[in-house]
Length: 273
Image (cartoon, rainbow, N blue to C red; front, top):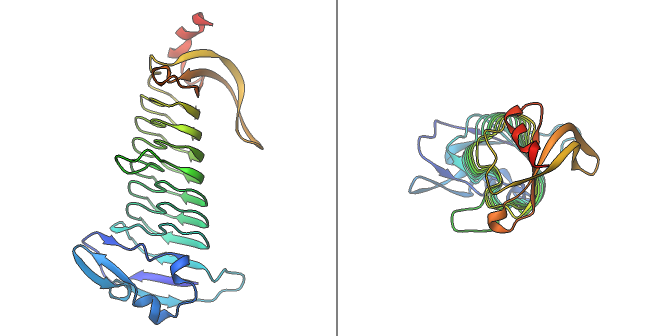
């Protein structure tokens, strides 16, 4: 196991896509320390910013990286990783696990925006909160999350799961506006409350809100009430849930499941059944 500890405070953004099990494997500590990163507009070595150590513990995978300390200014950790595990004991910067294809990232802190952006596989678990655009692509790109799973134990910002095609987003806290924007597939589960415009312009996929939803877009139509909803093949949640279909403005057939108990203001839709 490789352990990275910031050797000083990092006041400027650091681009460090080299922090990945794929890159570290079969390299010596010296070679890892020589890897290039950018701090602001200056190129540095990884060892200029981090203390690089090796710890061997029984039963631990060699393809494991542990980061001890706050790295909220360090971006693109785990980008495109396919194997191994990254454990972060603190906050982490933007673009965590960008285009990730396999392996696991665990954060015992908060993550900035674009965590899991365009990921294709693997697992990200964040025990704090996450910023905007969870699993979403860059502006101008229509390819969102295409596989894998992201679990956030806290809250998330706006546009979680935007342009999502496959995979699972599980949000145990609250979600901001436009969850599932232009969603084409996959599942988003919000166990807390959700702000307005969930599922805007979605065509396929599933959004489940267990808490309070501010409002349902007028381009969604109610289909009925269901006692439970399936999240995964072996995982379902008891309701009852209102089922809305849309976004009809996009000729979509996405499904929005909203807790009936937590949303009495939506009872006005029952007269349409």
